[in-house]
Length: 52
Image (tube, rainbow, N blue to C red):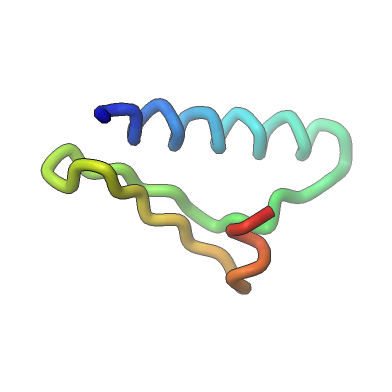
């Protein structure tokens, strides 16, 4: 509980790491709001990109 922001930062770091290697994570945005506990919003072109 309360790790939503940490997950969002980890995904951002994963995006930057993959981008530096010439790959793309295919995720457009990640949002973790303080008032929505236990939820993060992940935006991508396809559902499969989120599940990766």
